[in-house]
Image 1: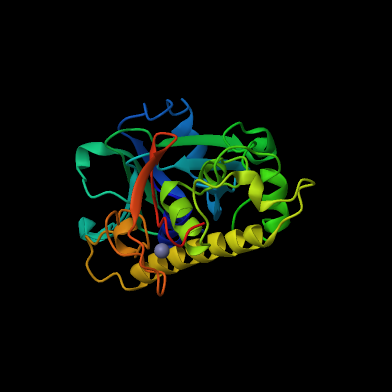
Image 2: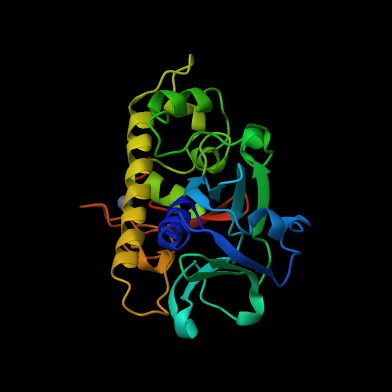
Length: 293
Ligand SMILES: [Zn+2]
């Protein structure tokens, strides 16, 4: 499952192909993604210009000249590929999984920029939806999402207030999209390690009884922002340094401190700990039992 940094990397990769470009032609090979595409999907895109390509949590939002917004989600296995029309040479692909097959190219955008953007999704958990901009606030996919972790509004006071009185684990709190949007299993583990906080710690212990933040909340917010910014930077440099046209972009370019490092030495300076894996809410948590308290 791509998390915020991967989706942001995809957004930056698609921007040159899609922003300020018109949908010259849209092909739908399979409309039954996570939800069926709307019947008027092609009509509402063809001839319209993308006036901006944004992101909210793990959703890409293409603003259209018609006043509609095209919402796109990669799901579990979705990816975008960008081709150049001349000769159909693949320019780049932006996704997080390796397996690709043209049979899974469900939606194809022919852009006036000359780029052909294909959406490939073997498992079809990805989704696309068109919503009038004026109704975006009521959109059920978006309207319960918490703050953007990299936005100014997300700070220690906000996180502490959201965790006040919460008896769930700190890890579970970070995965709760109503508390903060876009963080998944990998970056929750990474942020907690960087903050030297145990994933098993009770969430309310980063706040006072009245919900004011303590030093742990400050550390955690700083770590979340640092982990996400580093991952976006890694994704961005892999876009810039894209030499192989079939190069993969995604998680494997990043260096994780604890994620998927079970049994290996902790990277915290002078820490003798060994990374451990436990199950929390049915998901693997990787952490160091020595320096994460
Ligand atoms: Zn450690």
